[in-house]
Length: 454
Image 1 (cartoon, helix red, strand yellow):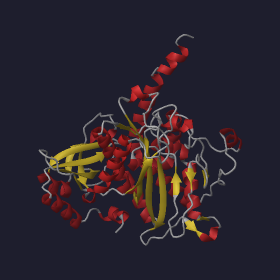
Image 2: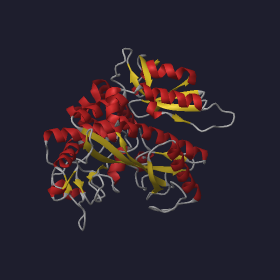
Image 3: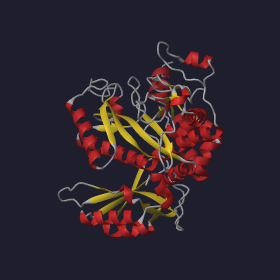
Image 4: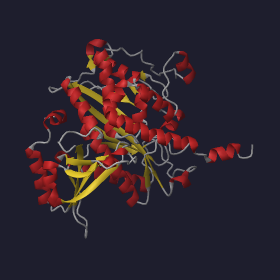
C-alpha cells in the first residue's frame, strides 16, 4: 500500500497495534507528539507512554494556537492524532527515561482535519493527485553550515574548515557528518549520501525518494538531528539560506518523480519524444514556472532567502528550465536506462515548512498538467552562460528580489491560495508581512558603515 492509499483510509488498526506493542516492548516511558506550525517550526507535547493508546484512538487535546507561527490570539481546542507509521524510539541513555516520538496530524473535535494544519494541507494535495491518477515522490538535497561559536561573531570567517566540494574536511566536521548519517539511518530515515559542499563548513545530506508525507516528516527529523549532533560536538548548525555574504548559500533541492497511481510506472519519461521527457513532464515544468513567483513566498519564506537568490552561485534568479545548467529554476538531470526521471526544483531552501512547500510545489505542477501548458524552450548552458541581461532581453520572468516582492505575487495567485486554504493563507500572510515590516524598519551595520559619516 502506498502512502497515498493510507491517506484515503487513515491509519489501520494493525499499524496502531504494532506501534503500541513496540512502545510496551521497549519500555518507553515518555512520548513526544510532534507537529508543525505554519512557518515550519517543530512543536511537541510530551505525554506518558500509558496515554499513547488512547491518543492514537481519539487524539490528544491541546491548544491549537501553537500552529499559528507566533501570532497567538485565541486558544483553540484541537486534537493531536499520532501517525503510528512515524514511530521512532530513542536509544537508551543511562539515568534517563526511554522516550519515543510520533508525528501527528491535527483534528477538530469531530475528527475532521483542521484547516490550519500544514500536514493536512499536504495530505489533501496528495489525495487530489492520487484521485487524478498520480503518485508523487520526492528526493532531497539539503545544504547547511556547521559553525563554531555564535553566528554573529563568524560573519567574516564561517569556519577554519578549508575543505572544498566533496573533500573530506577537518576531523570535527567529518565526524559530525558521519554521526548525523548513522543516527538518521538508525532512525529509519531514508538517507543517501552526505558530503562536504563548496563553502567552508558547508555540508550536504541527500534523502532518497519517498512519498510526500513521509518526506516532510523526515525533513523535520533531519533538522532536529543535525542540530543536536552538532551541539554535542561543540558546533552549531544553521539552515539559513545565506548566512555569510562571501560564502555560497544553502538550498533544498527537490527531485520530483511522478508515477501512475496506484499501479506505478514513470510518467515523466517518453522515449518517443526525442528527448525522453514526456508531455506530462513538460506540463509539470510549465505549471511550476508559471507559479514560481507566488510559490517563492512558501518555499523561500524568509528575508534571508532572497539574499541567497540574489547572490547567484547556482541559485536561480529567473524562471528558466534546462538540462545542463547550474542556475536554472528547474533542471531535468540525465536519467540512466531503467531509472525514473527526475524534475529538479532548485528554488527552495530549508527554512520552508516542508509540508506546505511540497503541497504548493505539487499543486502548481498539477495545474500545469491540467492546463496542458507547454513551457518555453530550455536554456541549457554548455559553451554559453545566460547572464541576467540576456535573460531580461529574452523576456524571461524574474523571480522575486525580496520577501516583499514574493508576498505581492503570493496574494495574486489563486492556485497557491486554494492549495493552502484560506486559513493558512491568511495566517502565513500575516506572519510574513510582520517579518518583512520588521526587516524594513531595521537599521543594519552596513547602513551605519555606508552612511554614518556621509
